[in-house]
Amino acid sequence: MPIHSSTAEPALSIVIATFNARRTIERCLASVVAQSSRAWELIVIDGASRDTTMDVVDRFSDHITHVVSEPDTGIYDAWNKALLRARGRYVCFLGADDAFAEEHAVASILEAIGGQSYDLVSSRCRWVDASGKRLGEGGGGWDFARIGPKMPLCHPGLWHARALFDRHGAFDTSYRITGDLDFLLRLPASTRALHVDRITVDVETGGISRAQTLMRLREQRRALSTCPRFGSIRAWMTWANKMWRYPIARALKLPF
Image (tube, rainbow, N blue to C red):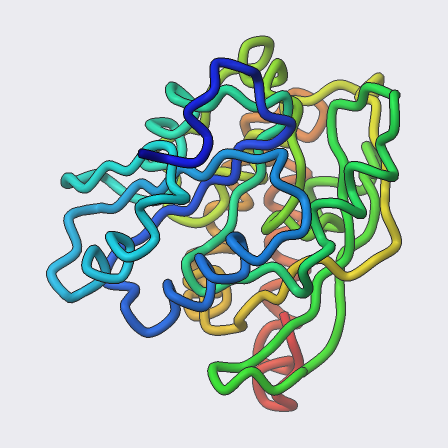
């Protein structure tokens, strides 16, 4: 029986999408279970992994409210499936290779929210490599003017009010990498946001968005093109500006 079988609405729905993630999924799930706050539910959507991912997931079954393992079309398809099941006031998404940075991560965000209501609650992240070595930090607050050409937010661990998806739709599954950016571009300037200046998530740098930079830049261009406040010309200008910078960053082994 899942520990969150109550009909009461949890504060947070934690969504983890997996596919052949046996190397990292135990670390991710263990970081959720270790949280000092229990005001969450956990949803795992697996894309029919062919390795032992689901064997690991099964070991955490007492802590998982919903688990699905079936073919999907990618991470945003998995996230949309999770949204249909999520009951939390807020929803956050962790990659299978991400993990909460410490046991009070969820509690610290809840404390910062207090009795207020926000559309987005962001925090900081720590970049790590596959061995767990710390490489740097990132993540800022919501900035309506900057979102698009840049991604100031750390999306892993970003808390979204569940009502946002009712108002602005689910994720566009035609994207492979930048569906989260596409969603954030739909949000208005009036978005109520809170930034918590605390590292709450460890993000492994080997994810698809970093491994396939050129695809990410193409998808970013498409997302900007379809956003009314940017349009095609600004989208192409942003893409061109990043394309000449990319070889330099790659040669110098800088994050991009």
